[in-house]
Length: 186
Image 1 (cartoon, one colour):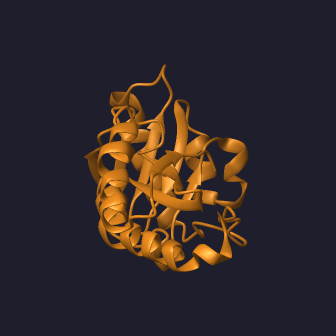
Image 2: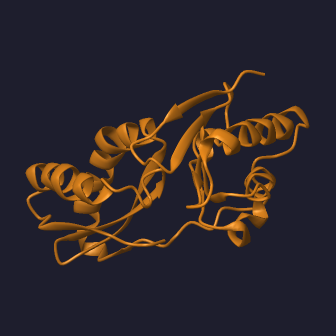
């Protein structure tokens, strides 16, 4: 099994490509700590390594964020080994049902929300996935779109600029009802 590694815009995060489906069509899963990883044998295995602070599972990739005291020179081979062992053992990536966060919007805005989601899915999410993360719609109220950043994007120094200058400007251009975009946690 050959696993490729790519850097991300977040210097604390690396993207690992195992050459096979990770989450596939099930979407994504973001684990901010070991407690949250109970339903993922793969994430739990990665959190068992010293220096792993966050794990994100994408369609065909895994991003791992190191803690401040870790360094990639020693952590990278350990992560590669853990991913390889997991897939070679044939273990599931995720167990149980996904506990997706609820969306908050007025049903009268359903058409606007669909436009927002379509733009996010077609124009934003592919680019964000390329950087080892994901962006999830969480709500729309009073012209404000609420988005949750996951994976390499969570905690990335440039994520605020990406939201404000990239995503917000694009949404405001195509959906006049949008006045601002804000980042929310979970």
